[in-house]
Image (cartoon, rainbow, N blue to C red; front, side, top):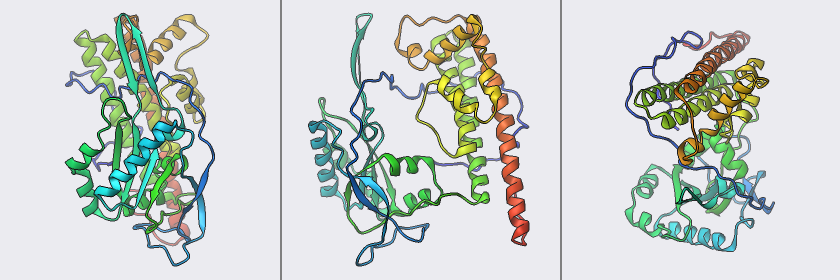
Length: 377
């Protein structure tokens, strides 16, 4: 994830959202999230080497006997069907044939065991969705990274064809992966916790994430998350208003859902540094209420009309895109939009307080160490 260092007003001091016309934004993920029961991952573990003490920056070559293990990581995804296991073995062989890589890690839905292979009919239309293999390829340096990312022959060799699982891979250097782990970035922490180490060259190790982060880093992360996710949420809100003005109300309500989801994601990241893999607004608001009970009061669930409005917003993630039976009126849209506006204002207020508390922690730490806090804190 790239964070762009752009100047923005301080948390808690942002102007109200404007419903100005903007170009149409992409609809976002196309996963209909139609869950199917899948087997839970078995706990077949292999030792996953880490450096002690914790390091930042590039990976280091193993010593003769290797460092002491600090984490376990599963190696064989035996919860997957045999044909998928064979596909993964083929994937590893192909990547290694084309490039010298250090690690190949399976993460995402196939690692967790909640992948989807769904085929259904609605209104005489056949819909099909199949989850991809999500793969992290770790390489030595930027040269290998560029060569692997822009290799059309490898892309062609990894093309699964019509009847096998498609592959979505990302490539990062060991230096970058270790930097992200040293900062406890949620995406890489999830890979470490949920992933399967399909291949390990043994030449490098991964940094052991610290148990906690220093206040200066927590503050930097909180400000980055606040800027990035608030901007994303506001962009979807404005795009929803634009599409409503063009009478594309089902696109508009989906984007309103995405706006609400991103406001809550902003709150959770600022407070915890973690983004849950969840699209259900009911569950997300329940988590948000742990930081301020007012989040649970945005929709009054005791009133039938309020429950209906919330249900329209909650179901918009899937049904507004895939179901012809989904219906919503402009009046209902406006009422829901006012609740999302309130969600935005509450998010800004609560995140602003969190950032101020972190700033105070940085000042206290600086006074204790006998030095002034860094500029901007």
